[in-house]
Length: 368
Ligand code: 13P
Ligand code: SF4
Image (cartoon, rainbow, N blue to C red; front, side):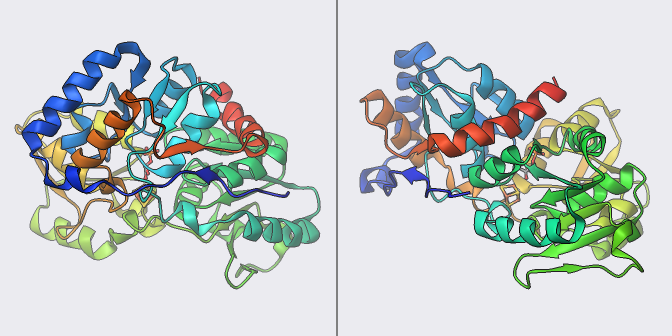
């Protein structure tokens, strides 16, 4: 597939916003939201900072935000999340709707771990080995070009909250699957569905080869792309041992982007939405160590003061790229759209968007 470079107009935050007081920014945002009314929609991912999420018209995990974007009618969607989420919103909305990412540097290191050239190359080698027996699935945490590749080859996107359902769906189509780009979500989901580790191999896109310890490659059912989330990889078995030692009555709940060993040792594992709902439902007085992004953990701590909540890793930081969307960038983005300028617009070329939309729609239609 000949994938064109995504077209974006990238500008830096003008200096005046760096010196503006928080009070003034809050006032400006409120005024613009009121003036623009239904023409403006602000979705916010749960990992966004409080100073940003307070202005979100809806907050959610990746699946919820994709579902909301698909139904959105607003002229401007100012997306408070990371680049791949804004691309998804652009793919699922009409051509006359504009999706803006307040800071173009808000990328995702996991999404950057699979590019279209590497994927084409892997596909050629893997289909050479296994013939037409593989279906590609990609976590939505991937570039539009990877979603397009997957869509073109009959596959679908998945999120952490529907991965199990989508892996089951994939096995109804083909004997094997290639899971991009998060090896941990792929492995944890396949194990949950009863696929043993010795039926899984890892594709290393840098070494360009398959890592497999088993006896016969014929037994491979899941090929995991060697990618990971640099935030969730920071939760370790050591953290779990520490919590078990210091707080034996604490429940440990982690996101499935954490490593297999960590998920196995935790009491519970599930998507961002699952973690939030579990904490909301938990009785007062219960104790929780959470293995996920720090802005969300801090919000849960503040919102549930009748429960004891800590981060599974006491030295955890927020996702740095999510954190790039801050009050100054949001104020700037909103002032630009209110004056009719499409600064930092995310615009996926239509050839890519068409194929990527197929992959997204297969997911949205299977998990309504
Ligand atoms: P979910 O919103 O699907 O839980 O994904 C977590 C994440 O890492 C988003 O970048
Ligand atoms: Fe990417 Fe991980 Fe940050 Fe999500 S939390 S945006 S997967 S780096």
